[in-house]
Length: 521
Ligand SMILES: Cc1cc2nc3c(=O)[nH]c(=O)nc-3n(C[C@H](O)[C@H](O)[C@H](O)COP(=O)(O)OP(=O)(O)OC[C@H]3O[C@@H](n4cnc5c(N)ncnc54)[C@H](O)[C@@H]3O)c2cc1C
Image (cartoon, rainbow, N blue to C red; front, side, top):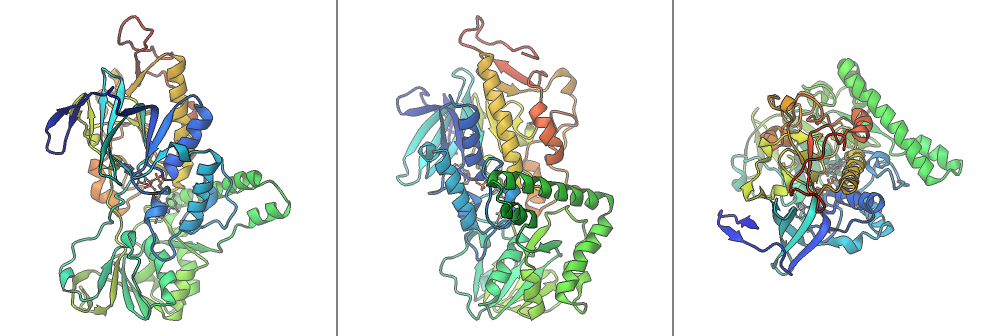
């Protein structure tokens, strides 16, 4: 097998050597996606051997990485939790509660024995001769490079760089005498007691950390270039409380509340398209009711886009607005001219003095964990592939990846994709196929590529910056990635594996070494 190192030097590695550990399925990443994948594999493909490789020292991904004050979900956990594991706490949950839930999921299914922590996948290489993936992996504890091989590779690596967040290159950053921190790499020793804090950004992260810092800090200023839509509510679910009072099993409560919330979210999403002005007014009315009629809601809380083009940030119990109403938190909507010794100078000439500046400015998108991929020695450029249903890619054999929903909870898609992948694996087994590769049919050949996401529909900053790196969609099924739970929940389970877009090959029992299962096989 051929592996290419970072300097493009080609090295030959035997892929059947004793030091290569082989399994049927290798999962990369032990976040909410990878743990979900492991559960469904165990349940739906019990005969498959599998391992999970995780570069961190523990499970949880996002919920392990982020440690800033108050870090919590902005989705309710009835839908952000798995369909197979009831959520029993408050709808919006702090990171430690989500980690407890994931730990229980690992224990329930005895997944722990399948996870190799501190194993960072450095590169992945497919060999058509061997019909398997070879992964080069660094054991972070020792620095040792080890190899794993698998028949099927399942990427559950998330969508952003875990090592550091996105910080724009502001002029004069070096001259600032205080501390600059990014929420993604929150320093354990950061003491903000009685300090003046400026938080750049007003997304979900800012909305979480500001109320959680407000009691201790001297003052917090939110400095935003443009406003964000917020919605608020009590952090409890009335229906869940009622069902529990009736002593119903938690499985029923979970499923019923999930359905209720999904129906409500659908209504809001539809309203954001059919009558965005009405939804906008409803959202702003709630903000006004907390911050007071004198507050300039038009400038500070009225975005230039329609609701849901970016995720609606959730403010449980209106904590952010209460901070503003109390005077402890103020909002400045302006552009940054530069950093100064003492803080930030805005374009309109105001100097915001600060001891600490928090850059809540978002993520850096990571495509497939930035792992270099090769197929038979040729490097893979994911941007040149078409996605098959947002799960696989043209030209990449035996590989699926997990990309969750952006407007509905991420995990709602995890369960659906897992069902699909397990069905595919079982289909391959029952048809004696060893390889499955999405490929364009004759009728797809001239299909116009479309971007991975329609920025008109959904346009978070990290996606705007890096959309060009993502796989492309086509203009018809199955080359679409709608990111819409309400269509996919019916479409994915019914997806025809025999429509000719998945090319199945090989069987040890087959007479010719390569053969294609006919559509419908
Ligand atoms: C602060 C925050 C709050 C969020 N809240 C919500 C929410 O409320 N609702 C919602 O739907 N979404 C939310 N999201 C989005 C969130 O990231 C996803 O919903 C979900 O947690 C992603 O899970 P994941 O397992 O797919 O990826 P991740 O959580 O990113 O986990 C991926 C794992 O893969 C590992 N990995 C990556 N590359 C490699 C490699 N090369 N080798 C080995 N291991 C690797 C990483 O170390 C990581 O542990 C939030 C995101 C953030 C940052």
